[in-house]
Length: 589
Image 1: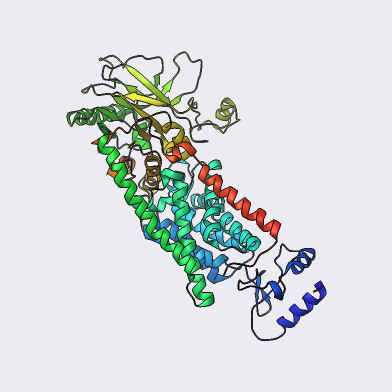
Image 2: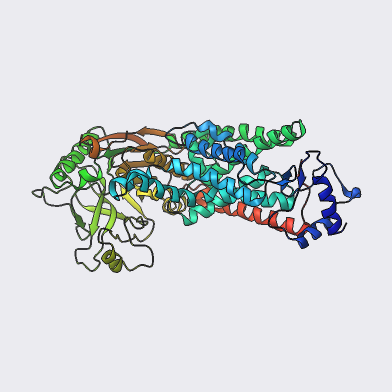
């Protein structure tokens, strides 16, 4: 068939007045591509029972509309299901079908439409899910509510690309291969999560929606939180294929239904089995009673000179009380020690007569969060440090934060700090630590993480592989007031415990402090406080028995890291190459 004949036949279809859907060229296709496509079109001899690939649909002769209200609403519905299913709203079951509206919206649409609808879904998910940014921007950055909302919107536009790219890739590969979304869509999402976690300050894993559901997150030990996200999206893809088969053919897609049943039965079954096995390991491991102190001070409270001795006294009081409850080591929060910059040259605690002395009223080892400095002034910048103060009052192992927050705590990479601080006097710059490290206290090795390092899966893996018995996190989330940020932070951190089968203990200055066991259960947690708004009410804490898992224990994820994500990316590239080699194929029914 010639190009001219094709165009004539298409014109006749458009003028028939039958109201049937006809198909026009995609915006990205030129006449030469059309001619090649027609040349490859199957003839009567090779026509099968699978539908041919269609280009962009037209209704009554008009092109498919980008601004299609039902599809836009479907994309928004998917985005909304993301923040509704995540902490602290916790409608986790929405994540079992929340992606289906977006898959309907991008079905049989041009790639640019799919990208757009995915972007809308991502914007809706991020803008509401990260609206807590406004608390930080209005209270501490000087922006008004409108300006803060605009900045959050820009952030959502950028991070929303994490939804746009998988939608575009899925449409592209379906066109190229004729395959369904069963495997392509979850692989596209996992590959995009891998990319986003490599370039973003705050990695986003949709596994967050299941943070409080241990049965559904045990696959994190195989491929990290990314593997849990893959499972979630795969369930939705299988459900969509079942729905699509019924809508288009009024029959059950048996293969999609079987895949859906396998996911819905297999994943919680695997979770149940692994929980029983890991619990047996936990019972066999030696137990250490660990105390966690939450100072309950906000940013302004912490900065008030007159409250510094009060804060220190409260930390000491609760530490002494936890020691009486049997705590063998105690954890303080990030920079919880309220006085200045502590010299790194100190070998022991301050003298007894010094009111800034840490060890007072207790002699249990404490992992202290504090700002440290070089007393020789050879390095003029400070460190954000977790330092072990032993029971005899001597300083032990020390860990320095490796990922100070850009702009907030450090000059951007490649920028001279002196120049940066000269141009922005209100900014600060902290030294970066020397890499992952284990710190020893009470005879056991702890993998230390400071602030948001506990949501960095790749870095936590390096820390866990330092032959540690448990993980500790010292955090200050006081910047965000009482918002959902604290629960989202904890939810993302939960996966570190499952990924490495090591307990995670978190001391967060104003909450949420928590103990997460090696199967991902939040066994103990505190409430969020805001002393800047409600007044300082004093510190609190808890003591728990924690299994000291074998230091040599390594999970599949601990050994392979992000291999699962790279395999997904390689699979997508393989699909693309196969489709390019074989040419466009008929789609699976």
